[in-house]
Length: 218
Image (cartoon, one colour):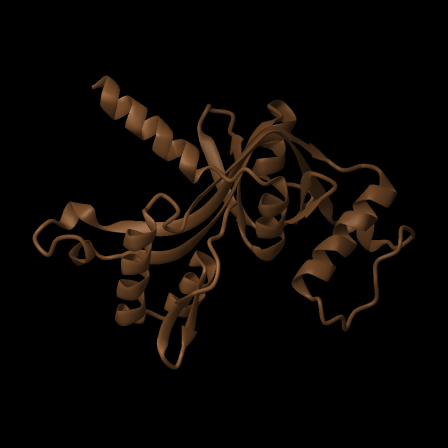
């Protein structure tokens, strides 16, 4: 039992994202996060939200009234989670008879923090412009200024993380031989996400097949 715990702890350590820059890069790329608050009956309420990560905090726009706002007004403790499924690994990659061996390659970030409504006009303006820049990088809109009336009709929620953890599983826990073997299986299966997954794993798809170009360390 103790050996199992040691192995599990070592695996968890290998899966941890250690680079804060990588965490920020991931949050800048993703479009949907899950915002968790505690309702008046003590149950968690989890809502998918668009968001932007600015100055080490999460910002989300919202209707000025609603259950999630009432929740964190009563209890400021909140959670926020973002994840990306890279590739489902069918069980037959390991054993065609054992369905329990199915697995998933993924990236995820989980935070626990303090939620509040942004009341400072300049901070609110910056957050809303940050959201527009993230979701509409091609432009085609007039930036929001601090004197616009639209600021009164929308709420901006801020979550300041107290803890922030990232995990990723892209084959880094495998030996190089096993990682190459897994990449070959993903390449052969050729799912819609395979090419991007292989790139994330550090492989390039060439006319001759797969080529290892990097060994990503997060």
